[in-house]
Every structure is written in structure tokens, then in C-alpha cells.
Image (tube, rainbow, N blue to C red; front, top):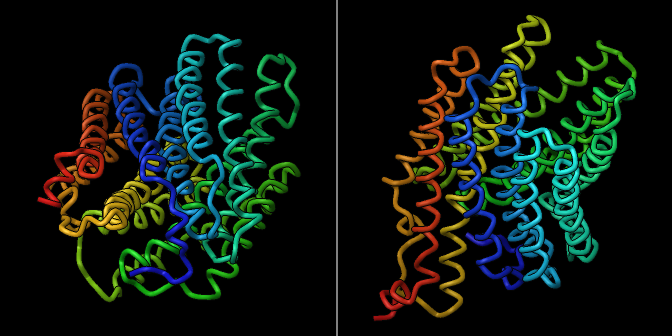
Length: 423
């Protein structure tokens, strides 16, 4: 089960990744409640309500969870302990959490000064994270495919932060640069397709073979995929700035094919794995890869059909259907393993299995709610009558997810739980 390239002795305390894992469904819950009260439609994407909802998902859920995964995985895969991690991780978490709350309030009430405060806090959170992770990468004992993916993701995040800094400085400028919209699109490209996608791919390189007892990804893929993705993102940005539509479409098609290949390869590895034991996390992986393929198809179709809702639909299915689903599946597999691993290291031998820590019934209920939430959010793109039910189901899905994570980790932190293992 354990990859020989991992340095498990470098694993951080459980409370560090758990801090991020527990917070993410709280923001997912808030996003659902925000839809319930303030988002009558997900079209247009540029409305203040939709922007706040988007950032609750993108930063509060997706980025929050991925930061927790990296704080856990990077020291283990690089073989280097993060110095002062007990200070750095809570600092990043606090800046991101508070900054996101301030951002939502400032954006909704149109308070420019508070908006700048929020953006400074958010930029500071990611800057501290980058500096900390660069130290680990610089001292890494070996450069594995996962490490390469993390490097590409951090490079993309760094570019996105510089672009976000420009957007922040231009916030109060009434005469925006002619490239302002292009810079905004480039920021989205590197923050979503660069930072987020590369992280997901990098984590899957490690998680799929280790926790699902599947074959590793093909060597040609692990060697070149991240480099090709980064080159295509640069090409997309160049095409945007040059205004060359044909070149932009060419790069987009190539990137779409590569991501589609990743989805199909992942499905194949899971389907042909050695131990075909189905749990809810497996359903999430299958579902997320199907949603990635759907988002790719819809996004390409929108380039030729020019239907406004198609672009919104592609973004929604990519972010909620693909990214949120695969990250939820990762956490359902990673958290029980971490609890089991840390308790085992403490000498507790009479423990529940990894699958028993949360329980399949609860995770299956949450998966069903998650799928229904996505379907209702898709309906909300076209019909505002779905606002209440979409908000309720989304909030309920994340509330159950939060309960499941607390249930799965409670045994590690409670005296009662520990006594049950050593009666």
C-alpha cells in the first residue's frame, strides 16, 4: 500500500491538514445558503452575487482543501519537514478564511477600501504558502512526478498572483488598460487550469496507485503532461494578448484533448485496479472524470455555438462537477488513512478499518446530495425557480460532508474514542 518514495516520517501533525479539510465544507455550506438567499440565477457570471458564490467555491472550498492536501503531501513526497509548520499553516488558513469573508462583504456592499483589505489578505495567504513550499521543493530529496506537478502548480499560482496584484491596483482606476479584460482571463487560466488542475493531477499520481491499489499513470504521461499543460497555458495567454482567435482555439483544442486523455486514463486505471472494492470515494472519482469530459465538450461547443449559457454551464460543471467532486473524493480517502496512520504510529492496534471510520451509508447519502445539487445548479443557470431548492440541497450536501469529516476524525482527538481501541 505504501509507496517506497514516500517519507512518512515527515508527515505533519493531523491537525494541520484537518484544519483546512474541516473548513472547506463550511464555506460550501455558506455558498449554498448564499444561493438560497441571494442568487436568483447563475447567469450572468459577472453579477456580484454570482462572483461571491464563485469565490466561496473556488477559494473557500477548492483552494482551502488543496492547501490542506499540499501541507500534508508535500513534506511526505519531498522528504523534507516544513519548518515552523505549526505557525505557517494556521497563518495561511486564517488569512484565507478572514480575507474571503471580508471579500464577500466588501463585494456585496461595494466598499472599495474593504475590497483592497480583502485582496491584500488573500494575496498574503497565498504568498506565505508559496514561500513555505518553495523551501520544501528546494530541499526535496527526489523529484517525483507529483513534485513536478506541484512545481508547475506553484509556478501557475505565482503568475496568477502577479496578475491578481495588477487587478487589485487597477480596481479604483476609472480608465482601465485596453488589456484589462485579457489580463483577467489570463488570471483565470493560470489560477484554474494551471494551479488547480495541475494540483489535482499531481495528487492523483500519488493517490490512485497508493490508496486504490491501481497501476501508476503511464511514464510518458507523468514525464511530459505538466510541461505540455504549462506550455499550452502560455500559448493561450499569448493568443489572448495578440487577439489571434484561430491560435487561441488551436491551443484550447490541444489542452482539451490532453485533459480528456487524463480523465479517460484515470477512469481506465480505476476500472482495471487490482482490488475492485467500491466505496464512495471511487464513485466521486468516476463522476468527476465524467464531469471533466462533459465540461470540455460544452466549452468547445460554446466556441462555435455562441450561446451565453453554455460558457456558464461549462464553468459550473468544471468547478462543481469536476474539481469539487474529485477533491471531495480525495478527502474521503485521505482523511481516514491519515487518522489510521497517526493512531497506528501511536501504538493503537485495535482500530476500525479505514473504511469504517466514516461509514459507507453516510458518504453515499452525501454523494447523492452532491449530484442533485449540481443538477439543480445547472437548472438555476436557465430558470430562477430552482433557487431555493438548489441552495437547500447544496447546503445540506456540505453539512453532511462536514459531519462525515468530524465523525471520521473524532476518534483521534477524543479520549472516549481512544479508550475504545485500548480497552
